[in-house]
Image: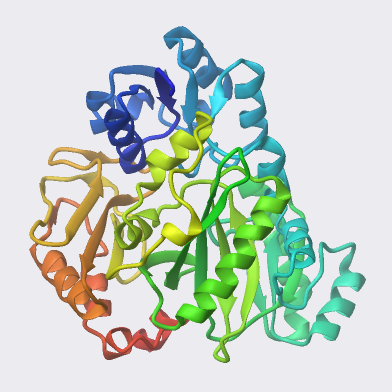
Amino acid sequence: MFRKVLIANRGEIAMRVILACKELGVQTVVVYSEADRLSLPVRMADEAVCIGPAPNSESYLNIPAIISAAEVTNVDAIHPGYGFLAENANFAEICIACGIMFIGPPPKMIKLMGDKALAREVMQQRGLSVLPGTDRINGSKHFERLAEQIGYPVIIKAVAGGGGKGMRVVRDPGELSRSVELAQVEAGKAFVNPAVYVEKYLEHPRHIEFQVIVDRDGNAVHLGERECSIQRRHQKLLEEAPSVAVTAEQRAALGEKVALAVRDLGYESVGTLEFLMDPQGHFYFMEMNTRIQVEHPVTEAVTGIDLVKEQILVAAGESLSFRQQDIEWRGHCIECRINAECPDTFVPSPGTITAFIPPGGPGIRVDTAAFASLKISQYYDSMIAKLIAYGPDRTVAIQRMRRALDTMVVEGVKTTIPLHQKILRHSDFTEGRLSTSFLERINA
């Protein structure tokens, strides 16, 4: 087991890793920007090192500064969390070259899955269905011809995409050229890679993802699915496990496919394969995220497995302590992302939290690094907390989440709590009529 781990992240995920390390008896080092000097992770870690000013490029994306902090504090490994450098193959390679274990998959796997078009091809070869589309685009004429063959509407996606950036839905041939240009510009700014590809756009699908974990011995296990259909601008707002639309037979069949696919690729660590599910129940692979997910707590709740601890143990060379036949799914769990945003426009609401009272009671978990007097910075993601409600069934989980939302206090900034309250009380949600267009439908 590692003696000391550096956490190259901030906020609630940094706290989550600190807590997992404490249970494992591992010391922690947190790197932080000047804006996060008074943050909860800085207070709770065994050591903390300032790596630069507030802007990401000068701190949390500053690889030389992070590696220097790791060497100065003599750590064994680096946990990247999610976002920032979590899916940066170059960073993983540098860690390994410096004799520091990267808590994540091998760099070649990050690189492979980071190319969304190539990932489609690789997973299709391993038996997973994909939507009609192409690997990447070579010129506007090629694009026009492919779009016509696929049939409108189509969606333009960044090859190195994620978080809804570099994506454009095109419903009319006249919009194609301009949409491609906009997607390329956005992709170039977000990922330093303007390459895009095209695939068929599904109207009103569900967004379903499968959690996997693989150890160095090639033991690959899936932990079932999460429903992530409630989104805005292709970014998730609420997740739950299991999905009301996925049968036990579908879970077993697709779960076995994804576990075999990642094992055959030589993958190690936790990972998530994302799918679109059409109304007929067909699944289409979209991409794989080679890191711990924001929404991992709902899977932890229904399986009883601590994914962050398992991720650390696997990185340390431990074999999985369970096999596929050991996994049981019990109850239902819902997670709401509480963001510092206007609930109507989603415009960020930076400022100082003047009061923060998290909810409690049976079945409630709150993953957060927030507290009263914390300043929500304009430089970082606006998420304040992840509010998680578990129950023996979906009805109880919904009741507990409603109670938690109604009793949670966050003052000083606007939050998405009112939006979640609206969602949790809408009949389409309670009856499980979900799709990626859910918000547009209930706000129409």
